[in-house]
Amino acid sequence: MARRRQLYEGKAKILFEGPEPGTLVQYFKDDATAFNSQKKGTITGKGVLNNRISEYLMMRLMDIGVPTHFIRRLNMREQLIREVEIIPLEVVVRNVAAGSLSTRLGIQEGTRLPRSIIEYYYKNAALNHPLVCEEHITAFGWASTQDLDDIVALTLRINDFLSGLLLGVGITLVDFKVEFGRLYENDEMRIVLADEISPDNCRLWDSKTGEKMDKDRFRRDLGKVEEGYQEVARRLGILPEAGVRDLKGPEMMQ
Image (cartoon, rainbow, N blue to C red; front, top):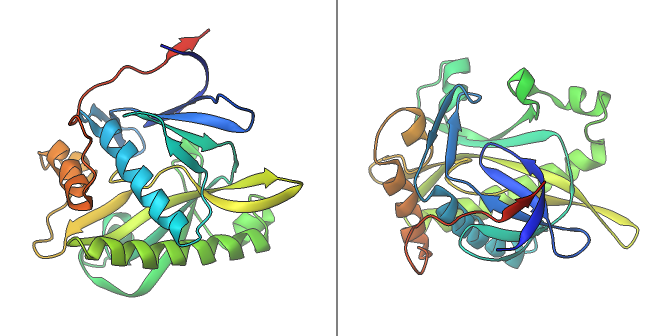
């Protein structure tokens, strides 16, 4: 097994040094957290499924011209990505009232919103990722006005495309979180989609029954968490060739 230098470990993924300059290897874990890590657990096979689902959705977005950090999938749990400077914002798109939006504003969960709403959260776990506005973002230099214009344009395009794609397989895209980074190439900078798109950071409901097929099954102790993730992959036609199974991560260099 290849020895790689670990650069970062988050709640759901580990980043390793890539084989070439400007690349990283992103490893998907089975660890699950909720409520700002107050609840922790393991969802067996989640890393394998999220790797495949994120690969598929990133590639489909690239097909319509959305720039991403994704290069290719390496194996069941790893993908090769471009190294980017992550913008410290979690960009949340809401199409249907759910989660914290329902709690904050007293809107019944499941209410279709009059239009898609974009919210920004400061990416800082110590502060529990607080909700922020454009004034905060530009005043503190997390992103420029032009950066935000690019982020909004990409986010709306991603939302439109994924909403249609998922509706075609009977899934409602209730809301989702995306992250963006600055990619520097040939003395130029551009904003690209980073992180992942999977049931970990999307609310996905069956379009007919409203059954949840995402991490809310873990958050709310609904049971059959693995089955929810598997159903999303099944509908997208991308269940792993060998089925969901555990794979060890690369050996880490000290």
